[in-house]
Image (cartoon, each protein chain N blue to C red):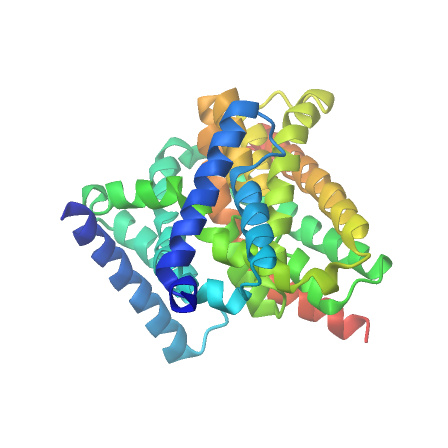
Length: 234
Length: 115
């Protein structure tokens, strides 16, 4: 019986069931906070804790899923390529905008983390919080953070950004679809992009492109900013 | 069969990414190198869209399922998060608003300036 529970097949099956439940609840309620992944994570953590299944045993199936997670990162090249042709003439503005957003966002996270006396591990887990999850997990790992914490923070950021983005858009009178879409993608990755697509097609394209670009940029900028900060404040 | 063929192409690109990372000891994840490789391959038309499209779309639209193992790993980090939940949420809120505003304003004014 125990052999069955720690088999990768069992993990994949309960993950699938939990994810289906998450998608269903999200669709029925239409509440952004009830995010499918967040629900699936909660259900699975409760199940594992209640049945005293160790995370290591559950994660036997994790290797199997990783076989698809890395290809999913690579797949981001497709929307980047497709959307580039639509937005070619705005490429420079978009790239500079993403750069400014990414740098100011990461500096803000580092300074606030210091202010709240968070450990280095937590700070490192928070730095990639605005980018797309697969790249964010990799950046977190590279910096020495915890990819698990990063996943959770990235989901919250995505939910929050997709709610607040349209509000900020109105308040700040942005009145520019490309700027709005870029900001959605830079601040709240895939969830922001879904929102931008509802709003406008051009905004959606800008957001989808931004998601990939800001992820790549963060890979290069995050270690740089973090080590710079650490050498200054030692 | 089509999906398997496309997936194999993507796996091969991933493998090349990891290989390049190991070869040059790069601080960039192999998957991100793979992303750049695929982009360059699409741009130079070494790889045509139809050779990878369906599988890419499939992976992208069901991506969040793939974060479950890492997400559930949160259960081993509860001690680390004790008493830190409010600061973490505050940091997430404030920095998200900042990133949104900075990006939107910069893009808006640059587009006008370049127009």
